[in-house]
Image (tube, rainbow, N blue to C red; front, side, top):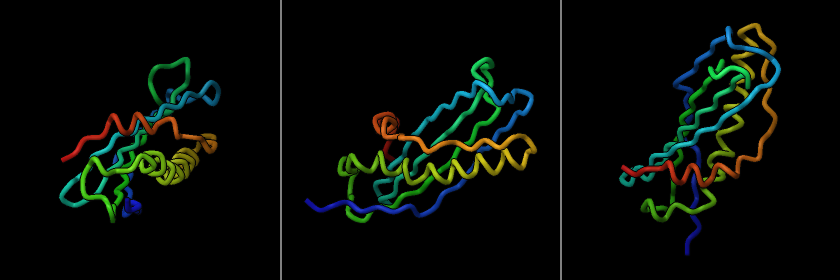
Length: 135
């Protein structure tokens, strides 16, 4: 069995929503939502990763960011051949960009900057796999 190799080709923040009326420094709750689309013809995987931050006392997120990361495979020819480790590693590759962007936009909004800690996001692997479609 050949080892599958992949690399990130590009990423884009295509949705950024900030509502500072809901912002409070305490009791922050963060939510991660990963989804994917695999293009069989091009052998690329688009990871759509949404991060929402809200105050646990308020249901409306004050920050919601959607990032699209495009990953290219070298040795994968079908959806079924995507290795299990890709789902974990693609999130781990994209998250530092999201983390830095959240820090940047909150600091530039003249509120106390939100600096997310490093997270072990391996638990999102199954959610990404279940939320992946092929086209």
